[in-house]
Length: 133
Ligand code: IDP
Ligand code: MG
Image 1 (cartoon, rainbow, N blue to C red):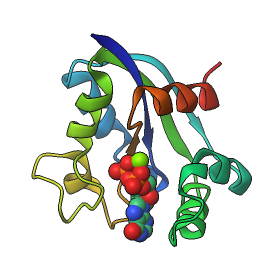
Image 2: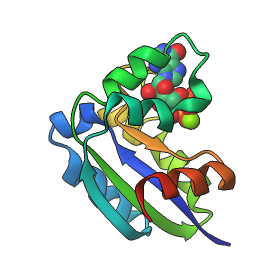
Image 3: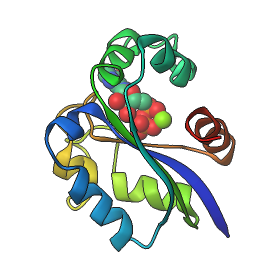
Image 4: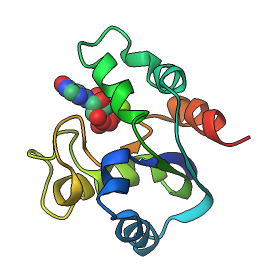
């Protein structure tokens, strides 16, 4: 079933100059890119985007990091796009992500892990609306 998901190239990957390599991988994987933009979140916007994690110990650090520089936001479409994109990203911790995944290749730490992907159809809908209207 074709579905949509939200992908983000995080500030660490933008600073590392790997936007192009990540987008190349997205295209090679067969996703359709329906939307793409570079933005910088305010701290308030990052807090809203990551509100599900507000009680986690890493919330303040994560939202500061995500608002620390430009990000690239992509609206992706494809067969089982949510699961497919999470497979391409790899595990949250780059040290545990499989070789060949984007987080293994480009991630720096558990927090600075290069890319984001929605984790369910419900969160995909909310996250897509957050960035694209
Ligand atoms: P996910 O991005 O793989 O879905 P989540 O558990 O939803 O992982 O966490 C959101 C983001 O918060 C992660 O991508 C990572 O940047 C950061 N994060 C998750 N767990 C930790 C942690 O234990 N310490 C620091 N940052 C974390
Ligand atoms: Mg998540």
